Length: 498
Image (cartoon, rainbow, N blue to C red; front, top):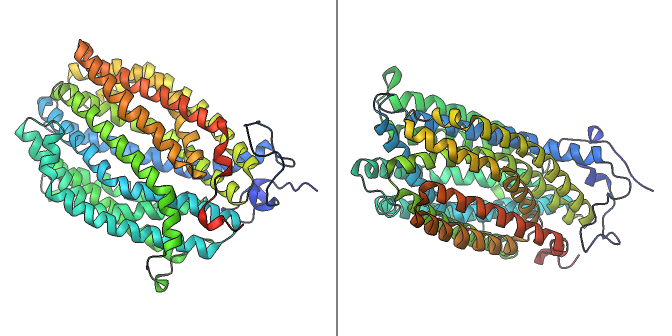
């Protein structure tokens, strides 16, 4: 007998249509993608589950990135309209720190992929104790790895900034200060991200939305106080922006810790159970996380080469590039929000041995993401110049940025689809495939093509042609992997006895 239950009838906000369906395996659910809905499931239920998980993440990520954009606009306005060179130098300083920082973040970002995938599977099977063990192991790994990496990063901040292509002493000094302050607050940010990954695994994206929005508000307030020295606070410029970010991250950590200690109906961090190494659980986390770590590291190496190539074009070109990359990061939030739904629901579906539901959820995530990406395409194509001008009033920056925004508009549908489908593959634990795809596109296509096109005289536009080629190729390869269907049959070691 088919069981049908509308999403509004679910017992709590963590429930999905999966909770009211029989466990698999389902005959004929493996193999190629069919697009057919499982018996007794409606489109309305699927879209309801997807949107319910995605909308808090979407609001959180969009507003987080908007706060980042305001942050960068404030930095870019240092010196005022009469001294746009100072603003360009400040933008370059912040931009030079991005890739070293993300490189150092690779370890816990990768482990968080494993945390989300494993917690989602535990939610699918109803194993609360195991899910909470995964959380403790994830926090243990994050604490140790981040503590070591932050110390190394603080010591070598200046050499990393110079390696990234800084040639002006003012820019080098500001970038070094910014990066060292960021790394001093690295631990709280990393632990918060692991808690967020665990909450998203059970479909609780609302909690992370709340504490991250509060943190963003705190960040913006302290930006105003510390960058310009308002209300008696010291005028600290770029360093003030970094301190404001760290304060916001600390606030987020405190709230996230309170939430996970109190519990959300499925997850609850019990400190009395300790944080001792658990070989089997850590083994599964590493099994999923290590390929993702390789992916992150290779991606960052490619991005560093790409960034150095653009930095070689001069301060104005790099400042323009940093502005447009910041705007692109806003568009990333679309794909990431629905990738959260895709990762969570695919993981829960496979935990329940329902690959048919995993497929159905992923396709609905793609459809919604495509509609929103087309709206962003129109926005960037029509108002690109005006958006760039909000960061800096230099006519050269606005002119270059307007053209780059057309490239950014073009890649939106490819970018959104790639994020969402790759999120589904990660939810299934298929992180090796995404690592290989990232290696091909980020280590070869983007940096090599950028070097060639810049050398041919295309300048910053050559770099963005390379970025577009990377996104298109990655989308194609991710879809080929998804259509193959192997992700449906992946099993973890701890599931081998099922």
